[in-house]
Length: 476
Image (cartoon, rainbow, N blue to C red; front, side, top):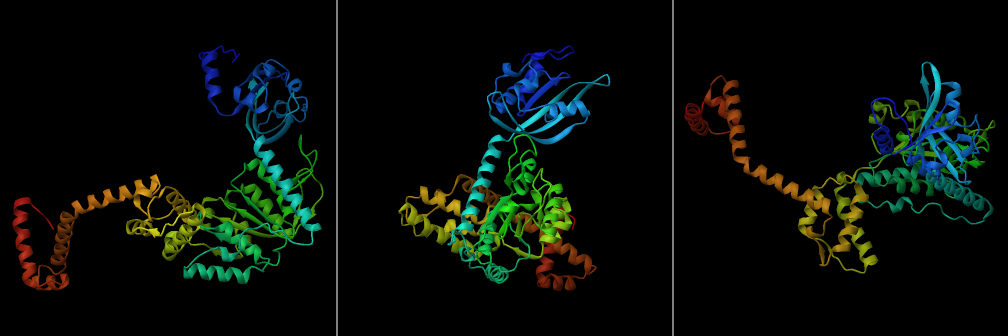
């Protein structure tokens, strides 16, 4: 880069360091002219470095002015701006969406410029806005339509199980589905939380109303607020009038997955919406009343989330009115067999095969394996095995690579344990005999009773130990 450095480090080394950072870096002097601009920033903005370097910032980005530019803002206020959303148009009319951390540069107590580290969220924002627009159109069509088009694919009957505890959870969900109280669903990733929540919506009085789902960990924190609350034209450069998910879920169900991933500040705003039923779009001065049932989900235990501070206690207690916990697959042994047979039948039809089931070795392995990815992992494992299997049953050779490695490690561990079994048992026996002798103060008959062995057997073992103790100085 065309950058000058007066002290120690060469401009080539400094440029190489800055260009190795996977974020856009833009530096301007006190007059707003660009003095450094890296390749990532150029890629974000859809420009070439030479189109920006040495030029006034506002000439390159004509949609900005000194009030809306984060770089000019920090030079004026001399205060940093952290994770600030900015929308602007480049020289060629392309809309750019970034989240910036902008810092003033001070030399000898005076502002000498500003540096900005930017993350480009243009594509994510574009896809998200398209999704919200689509949801809005679908909702509008539903209002006009006389027949209902389902937004959900699953009912509670879609949650397949033979486990008694899971059956009880399903039955309880069917009874409580008509309630409008908030719900909290706890379960590990892959245990079927969204399927379960869709089933509750379908069994509710709002089954003909919208079902809106959002994973709180799936989009950047800085965009989540506008996604939930919506935006007003002029709230920031490039912003348009757009409803948020709260408005789109009006009359129906809003499912917030991984609620503990939502920023704490935003959790407080969510709580207020749940308390008073009012939503204010970003940049707006008016409130909109909404009425939806919220169902939140967590893939970690609430006690852990509360201890870590990843969820506010007041929000948790507001959501924790009706709670359901989906058991992990490792605790549902009946379902391992039942779901395996179900997926084999499903993929037999899809792949035009006639696999009859698992061979005994794979069956034993499936029972021992912990299934950290739960039902999702089991389904994908069966799908892979059905693709590669050429015989009548699924064998160890058909397992995915990671599970083959796990199985091999388990075999190696068992071999090592077998080799060490005899000395380990002898050591344990010596310890127990020694403890019995100590407890009975050397009374052989009482010690034998404690150990539940004949007195003669204990005397024989003590004689062996006495010889060993002389030869090896064994203590017990």
